[in-house]
Image 1 (cartoon, rainbow, N blue to C red):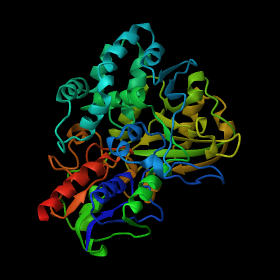
Image 2 (image 1 turned 90 degrees about the horizontal axis):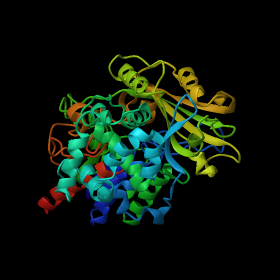
Image 3 (image 1 turned 90 degrees about the vertical axis):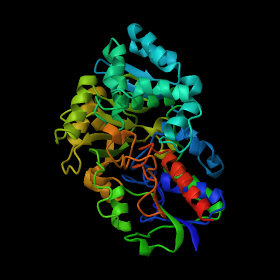
Image 4 (image 1 turned 60 degrees about the vertical axis):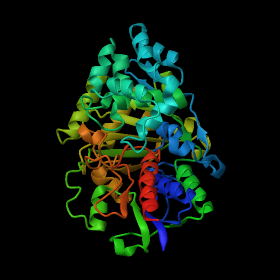
Length: 470
């Protein structure tokens, strides 16, 4: 009999498997797709030689993840590449605010009135970043905080809505960039703990950057898989699990799936009925005949570029998708251009580029034209560079990855108490009604992102239970 079976070979499932195998448990992973990866894959979606990331591409939380940093993933091929600028937010006048590794450079891009307020916001937390991120990403209490004072100070700043936090800024440039940071998790700007979301992304950029993985996000999943196999674990692909009986006997089962899928497979009935999924996304992967023609010079060297004319426009777009049930006329968009730092992702002189905008859950329309009109406001002539597109709305995203219910790439709404307490209001979110069944997906704390911490935290709950049994 195996000690542990893991269902789902996304970053969280693979991290949980690695953590358990490192502690001497026998582990097998079962994945429905023909390759490992979940939200960290790389595929030729458009033309031969163009290597795209179907979901995550830039990894501010990945490089800062305590789980990943504790593993020898570089030995298995993972190499982080840092663009000249982690992120840029262009404006229609041809200028841009930036999120730089340097706090001073970032503050200067906001203008003189907001340089000081921004420095006072982030500088107190930066010296304690490694401890803070460990405490923040281990919530709820899978471990006692290492620095409870800093964590409490962070909570005082971050738990109120981001609109409260941005009151300290005078001008629109800082407010807009920060609103875009919050919108990475598709949360309304006025929501609970949205200040913390924006602040975490900003601090991550200053502390460790917003890198891409050389060769694509698949490198993260492949490194975890290779390390797991060296530890004696096994991985089975093309293996869809419809019920617990489909799996071999084990002392524990860990699911890197949505709560909905887990309830169906394990026969939990309506146990997760109150769990809410968020808006979907509409994503376009592009093969380009050269770089994006951004008007703002800073955007040409940034790995990630946020698109939204001002904080009001971003707020309107988020409300349309999350509350009004319609696609926005001018969507807030996150774009990533890996080729600025990893030219091997495309044939010589060409580039890969992706962009997504928020849409209602399950939306079946086509946002391509609206997104490209929005891009043309900041990069005139963009359409002339397009060689091919791969389009994926909520139905296509959900078909590719069953965890993306309704096209929600965060595997659950990041709003209200569900921002921190997910998938149930519980201090033991990784356990389930069955004592041998656990959940480790992005539906558990700390939530969305390629960081493996949900798997890391769940593994702690599993080995505690297995130790009790021995």
